[in-house]
Amino acid sequence: MRRLHDLQRHLGLALGGAPAARLAHRLAIPASPSTVLRIVRAGPGRPQSRYRRA
Image (tube, rainbow, N blue to C red; front, top):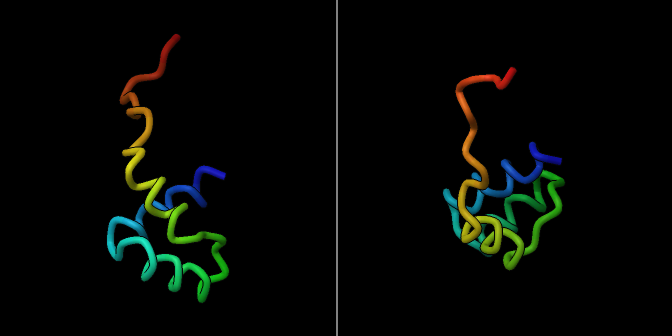
């Protein structure tokens, strides 16, 4: 599920709402323009830590 979210976010950052949704449709990735914009506006999500917790 995270990979799908990342793909939708990258498309949204590169193209914007409607163009990203059109390309996603051609790539068989489920995304509407509003979904793409919502994901982009939400930001990168939680930061990835470089260190593992013991």
